[in-house]
Length: 472
Image (cartoon, rainbow, N blue to C red; front, top):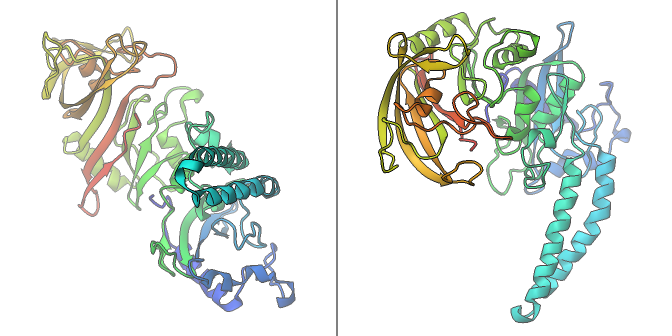
């Protein structure tokens, strides 16, 4: 995933840390108060020789922060445990209760290991005579391992930038129901440990970097001495919740974020509507300009947004949106088959693609709803193409069919895609979960996602293309 903060000066601090480890030959070279330990005080398990056994190298990270007085503070971390040790003086602590973790492991591991021993013994016997018992043991081991992991993951606490504390239940949809478990080691990487320590201490992150140190892994996906951004498969699950933003790309001029459904793009009226992409961005990056937004998504819509850090970048991006040179694609699920003039016919068949041009304006008696108006409306233009039909229950749609559509807006009118989907002169089928132009059932969200965004970088002139996985 994208590093949410500049790599330097934390990258230089990582290189200095490696030099210290080479010199001191141990991790416990300092107490928590920063004073040096003597050789007699050091734990042999924390010798760096452990890292140079085949495949034992680890990630190490540094987070440079500012405190409330403006002073710089450096925090350092190692990924996971170090040779079976969770806590080392001078390094940030893990994000779980290690005593509870050790109790659970000591309780469950003997049974899991015994089941593994029995399974291996049966695997050596003829398949016909052992199949039923083998499957029973494997199922028992699978259930026990999953229950043990769920207990352990429930021990994690993630301090967040907004002062709240997140858990896997709040960060990972499906965890509470037991359907989803995060990959092994999620929450143990350097980045979440460092950010958790910073937020719990009231420090503001400035720069983040991670470096690989020790013997390279068998997979060969890490090179000793090289800097790496936070990993996508694990850190990508927890950092967006900790930071309040899912950052897809960032440099000194612009940032691209993946907005969740239900969050405003810009502040609304009233204190209850202050939380939004812009306010979160300015908290995370205090040096950002006061008005970084150059476009917006409806609160109910998810997907990609680009924002500017500088006045120059804001001006150049705004010009591209005004001149309609920014290319966007949205994906939507429509309730039922398209029956409107632009997308269907009397038989209910959907055309493969088309263009919708409809004039509409604000319904002043029912804000923020838009209404079709040939006399006073401004024309919105949308290209679209059919992706697929998808089955659903009769509760979701009476004919048990949803239609997946890709929209390419050529103009940027308020609620343009939602109205073009719903109106009979458009596709004639409202987007699933649309509370303004259709129906929202309990537990539904608006099934509209900004999936692709392409523009010219305001400074480099490079063509920037970003894609976001469709979450439905």
